[in-house]
Structure formats: C-alpha cells, structure tokens
Image 1 (cartoon, rainbow, N blue to C red):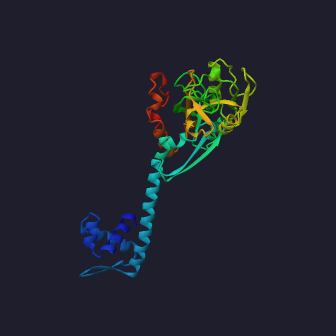
Image 2: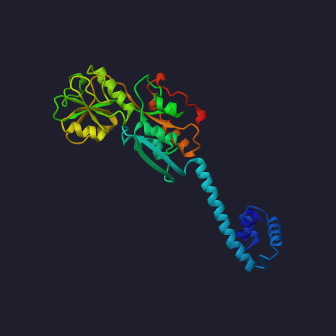
Image 3: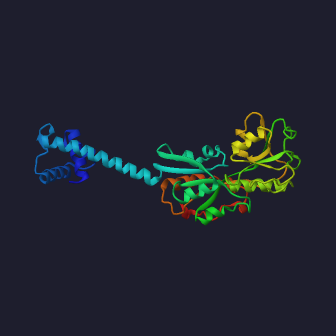
Length: 330
C-alpha cells in the first residue's frame, strides 16, 4: 500500500464515482480500477460497493479513508516543513550584537526583514569578545560588531579571524560628537575636536574594542592625544570612562565632558544633548557581520544573501570591495 493508492481511494470516496475520481487524478478509469482491485486484494477486504449510480464505501473502506486522510495530511505537512527549512524560510536564527552597535541598525538591515515570520529570531547583546565567542561556540549564527580602523574595505578583526570566522562589512557610518546643548561648540554645524574643552567621555574598550580604536584615532587626528578606550588621563583634559553608549551620553548630559559616537546614534540622542559631525576627517566606522563558514543553516545563507546584497559597502570603489566572499559561499 503506497501513497498513490491512498490518494486513489480517498478520491473515489470523495467523488462517489470511479470515473470522476479518475478525471480528478488525471488518469483513465481502467488503471484506477486495477489499482483499487489490487489494494483490496492486498488488504484482503472489499473497500467499495459498486452500483449503477457509482460506488459506496464499506465499513473497512471508511476506516481506510479516515486513516488515509490523516496520513496524506501528515505527508503534505512534512513535505512543506522540509521544503521551508531547506529554503531557509523556517527555523531558528540567533544574532548577537556588540554593545557599541546602534540598536537601530538591526531593524534597518534588510536581511532581518527578509527572514520572514516563520523564522524564530533571537537577539542578544555582548562585548566584542563575547560576540566572537558566541558565534564560535554556535550559541548564535551571526554576530554584529565594529571593526577597528585600518585599510579601507578590509575586514579587520584579529579575534574573529583567529577563531576561523568569516567577516564582512554590512554598514558604514561616520563618527559624531555628542555635547551638552549648552556647550560653546554646540551651536556650530561642525565641531572642531581640537577646540573642545572638557574631559573626553569614552566607552570602555572591553565593551567594544573595534569602536574604541576609532575613538582613539579620532582624538589623535584632532591632536588631543590618542587615549580613547583604555582609561587613563591622556591629553589636555583627561578621560572619563563609561561602561556603555547610554552611560556615555548620560555622563555628557551631566557635564562630564563630550563623547564620540557612531552616527547611527544621532536619532537616539535625547533632549539636552546635541550631535554634530566633527570638522576633522575621521575614519569611517564599519559594522561587520561574522559567522562560522562551516555553519550549515539555510536561514544563515538567506540572511547573508540579503545582508551582503546591498551595494552600499562597495560604492566607495574597488579598494573598498569585499574580499573572499565569492558565490561559493552561497
């Protein structure tokens, strides 16, 4: 007894006629009759009572049709589940986001919306080191973190590379200076970092070593010393270290100094603070996605296709093109 035989007996039961069932099954009547007779011989019972108006089910036939409908429904459901899992439209997907990556980046990343409602999405947060470790341990499928400043377009995260992870840029943004709205430089369209007085409020390097590198580089470019994420008192006015982006903004509002943040945070700056681009040219902050190259997840493949399909990271020219991300990855 195979699935086709079950489909045949269900069709005959629902149509009440072998000829109409044959038409529904896109076959002629003789082969259908043969298949029904064969099924009856196999089971050793009559399934149908034939008469001039068509056919009726016997008691045994009614039991078979009831069970056959369940079996066919289960097979159809299993086939659909296998298909959707294989295509990556159903399943689980874990993302771990670095503390310094703006929360608004995730909803604006087209890859998240492309996952669909049947994908169970879990988002957690951690330090850059935790992002790499969780992806390496398969606690998450992908991680989002900031790369350290360096050669444009090159994926720069030694910790991720040491763990054998793939790394690719998904977003670029400039730095902005966040000041109290009463600050003397707050009225300017652009802030001259070399003229900003007061302590530099920085996010601890432990929270995001990639972002801390950008802050150090920006202050060094401004000629105010290179300290930007490791504590200490480098430069003219010293450093106040915050444990997170939100704490840094709170310290700025309290008058502790000024801070530099990725531009994605501009819309999150609350009343009493202003965000202004620096007058100095500072390195663009790159947000990267990292993942295990041996991760066998169709949802991950769909996510990466969407996340890396935007031309945005590549519009800056060939020197910014992604490296080592050919079609073989998909």
